[in-house]
Every structure is written in structure tokens, then in C-alpha cells.
Image 1 (tube, rainbow, N blue to C red):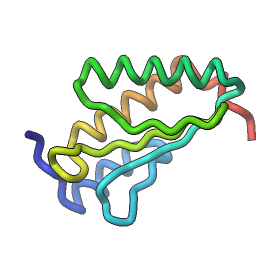
Image 2: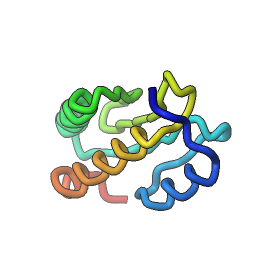
Image 3: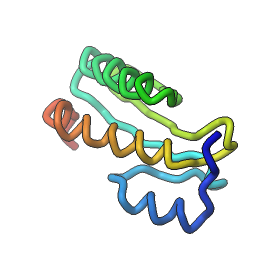
Image 4: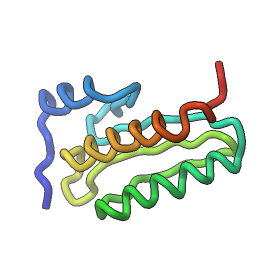
Length: 106
């Protein structure tokens, strides 16, 4: 089992991520992307699923047409662990390398 991070550890790790938000209880982090098409959003879902499966760490996904929201927490630790922040960082890297040009422009 992975050890739950304390508030200071969570704050330090959150600063290293790109626009992930922390819930009020400091038990999960989430981020949302808006892609230019449903097909791109589904491709993103599949790619993140492969990253997650390889690490045996499975996020919560919420999809609404071109929007994809991911929430990370470590269920057996009842909160956030290094696994959550490592996967978040890998998701950010995936987006910057393969999906950045496919995000909707604001």
C-alpha cells in the first residue's frame, strides 16, 4: 500500500503540475481538457488508459463530447500518494507531446 501524503507534501507536488486542482479535502486532484473533436477526446482516453494500466493506477474519467476530465486519488490510501502525482505528470507530458495541437483554442 502507498502512503498518503501530508498537506505540505501535497502542496509541494501540486506546484510541479500544470493546472491540476486540489479538492477541498486534499483527497484528489483533477484536470479538464477540451479537445477539438470527440474522436480526439476518445484517443486521449485510450492513451491515458494505457498509461494508467501500465502503472496499475486507475483514474476516474468524465467525458462530455469533446471535454475530458480526470480525477486522481489512491483509493487504498484514502487520499493522494506519489502515484497520483506521477501519473498526473505523465498525463501532462502525453498532452504536451501528442495532443497540444488538438486542444480547443480559447
